[in-house]
Length: 180
Image (cartoon, rainbow, N blue to C red; front, side, top):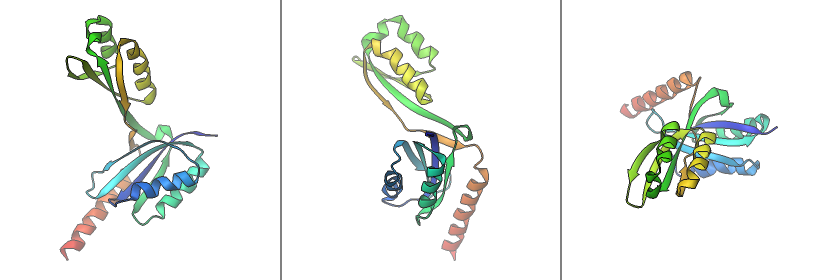
């Protein structure tokens, strides 16, 4: 049975690593629905947060293949209840909508905020889970929605403390090796 999983991959900063990771999913016929990457709290270590629809058994094989890449520190498969996550959406709407008091209620009720206002449009920002962001999109469409964009998932694993301490230790060891 296919369901949504979050895969986290901790890598060194290397050119082409994104391609090398995504090719492994492609070869197994797994579509990536979201991918974000950023440096972690450990300098030189990057974290990929990859969202996929798949089954656990197949994903475990994919993670095993990913971990065999030289640049990879570790990779993990997570169920939804093992991560705290958010996504970010931006909505560009015709400024004419501001003359309608209902739009202010939608903004407040959805904990969104206005980022910028121009004579032609304004931009709203909202964070949440994908269903919340799409729900707000549907509420805004009648008000002159011009453009919509959404980020991928940003996630923190609930149990990752020991692993992050290990990453910090590796960083300290590398710094010590450079001094010698």
